[in-house]
Image 1 (tube, one colour):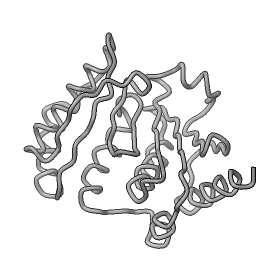
Image 2 (image 1 turned 180 degrees about the horizontal axis):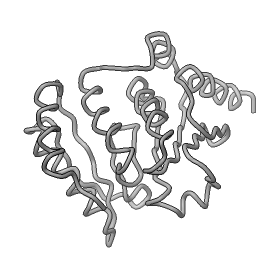
Image 3 (image 1 turned 60 degrees about the vertical axis):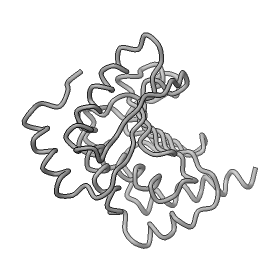
Length: 204
């Protein structure tokens, strides 16, 4: 599993120095005998080092979500963000620290107004060109509203989950375990699907 190289870390250090406004704590969700957990810990340690203390990390035993990273209380990345997922992960750390959102003011307002609990699972693969933007919207929606509980699942690192949930193509987004969408959505469509999932649950 590749780790951030020195050139990338230097660029990241400069980016953090200029744009990372407030700190955050990342949580390694670990379990015994997990080799990927060690790689995730090293990956995050390098990020913490170049943040000069603004980003911290600690490890928590979690048999249900191992291996993974808890980015926010309601946002978990199952696996490690590699390939096309590294950039969105790092950019979100910066943008979240600044309160920067790209989903649009109207969408953000409607997302903040959601009172119902919603689960959003986004199944991705590190080489998928469509996954990064879908993941970015999921990151933002989770940041905007704690009622939206998001898991990003790497189907390459966790193939058993891809098989279990019948993931044939990525990105695949499952909302409240009921509404399934394959492919990338724009924020407006994503919001509509979340509202539909809420209404469907209420009507049961």
